[in-house]
Length: 426
Image 1 (spheres, rainbow, N blue to C red):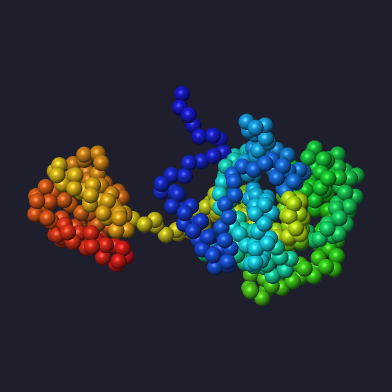
Image 2: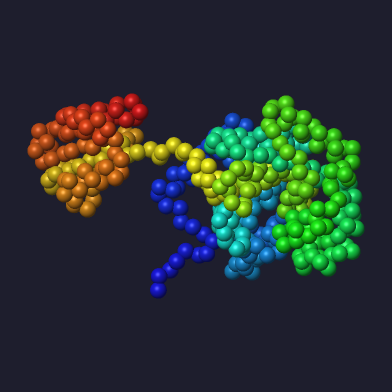
């Protein structure tokens, strides 16, 4: 019986992986310009980190985590999101003590959630995320939002919109929490079991329920914006003011709720607009968090961040027929004719690669015609032809595959000749 890939995972093959690399490099370049540095955290962490950091009332913790017990009887979990692990590292490695603050980080790697696989939603997926920890300045919120929007702009995705909301500070959230309880409690039996369990623990999560989103009480639920105290209102106005100054357009949506427990003040999503995106239009989400670092044993260190799925971003690019630059072609394919020439190509290909030239050769004893076909399939810029006679005379023929021009070059000058044509001349 053949072994197949697990459900909800995927193989990213040559020809497709170049698109992933292009996206990741674009995102990393934007982060570099904003002075964010890369961090790499473990793929699995102690389960308690996510229970405390993400929140035990969230769907992620309640039903989506891949949790297992290791041989030492420790409960470990494959990371379902990136922020908790970054915050843990921030505390454990005492990054709060570094001279340059706030600590500005980005990450890129696989995450794991046990969900029903569908287009744009995998059980193993890749997230690119950003965290800025250690500042309560509304300007850092605007910077993070601008960074996220810049990534989409760099990739040519213009049909996106930034949707904002404020979840307020603790005082504002407590007031809104009680208003939500009073609103939903008389009819809570109409809602799903999850919502009933969330009523007292975290009623804000009811607004994020997919099963009951069409219930009429959802539309009439109290808005957080009506419960913001003066400090929270001022904070939100400053964030919007900064975005106005730098020219980042946005839409305020008082119903926007992020699915994790640690969010306060600014919450946001970047949504896809236009045709072709299907039912899943959220490309990116994030917000400001308070208390997460403290819950993990660190000092008071507010933060803000976002994450987006590479898979979902690729869907958006393909839906808009966004042109992605072609991957680099092979510089040179070396064709051989004769046993001595074949042996010599081993050395030639090695020296080409050593000189910074991408090169390949035949390893299947193909006829000369089949070797040329291989060079065509690999879209080689140049084909170098070496036969036993040429080898005896210290010569090699080099063909420009674009123009068809072919020249004879001294073997001892071959590497420098090709280097000038490729690495030097681009």
